[in-house]
Image 1 (cartoon, helix red, strand yellow):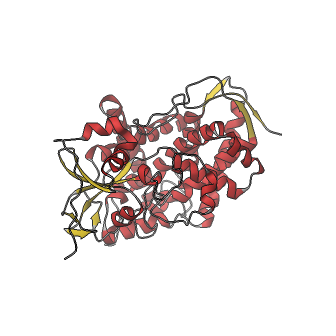
Image 2: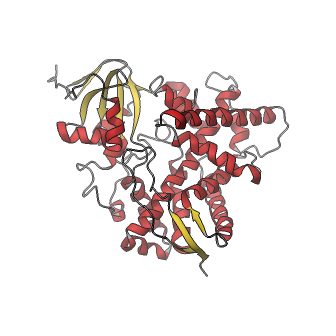
Image 3: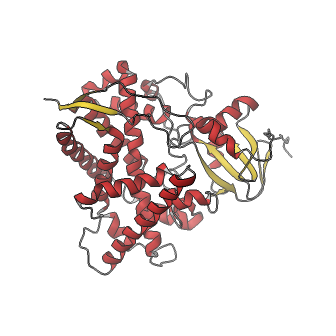
Length: 419
């Protein structure tokens, strides 16, 4: 028998409200206090184990020890994830469904989304020249809604862009909200699923003609690991698991523009358009700024790790933001230093802004490559294809609101195309 370690425990009957106070630093603050990467608290009326750091991330993504089914809060299912999607599957069902998403990630598909993104930036910036000012965040959502629909084969009329961009934005903007904003997110989830369910029916009834390599077609005819055609409601959820994350990249685009403004000594290096510099800058934006605070799972069966006892069905949170800022793995974690990625070893466990683990068999976001490519195109366009002025505005961002964004959403004026 190995030596048993007692998991440090935070006092209190329920510490859920402290998440609202501490936000993205909720777990990291406790890691500093207890000097432990494993700690216990109480959330939503039950015991919860919090993990942070590379080694605990490896543990968290061990599919023999943790399960995702039933782990996500019901509130998040009603807005962010939906019911029946890949995030909540385990075992063979998860591997089979994940393969469907990974089938869209070959070089041809990724190049297509790069081309679509550049095309939308070009057409949008032409219009912006005649505008007194634009809000980058809202414009980015519209750009990426069109990119996402074009890429997946989802029909989208120009008159629908604003409506669908708002609906898709609501899904991730309301995930951690209460009250009216949460209800708006639920309403948008219902409307978006109905929109896509109707399209799935039309594909199956041969009322829509589209290429067979488009996700709308592929997902509509996909069969599960038991050979059964997916219910149209599940197809709608999975299509939203493509559309929603693409539109959510608008958060990163906003932070990219902020970084260009805040760190001119770094952004000036991008004027060569060199891909590797763009890549490092994008990766540092994803590491440095807040995106997702943590992800959740439940213990599959009782087990012991490093002397710590994990009991079956215990809610477990992995700290994404804290792992990306962990001083044991990142030198000067609170500095914006893109060149740190010159020597990063590509570990799937110490840099996890969208989750960790392996792409093919784990729960790491299948769209991470898409995120990076869209961010690089967008960053290059902001730095090298257009010029603009930033009027006086509030560029601060909250560490408690989720998702966090610059308060002004980045107001741009006097936009002009570079020669």
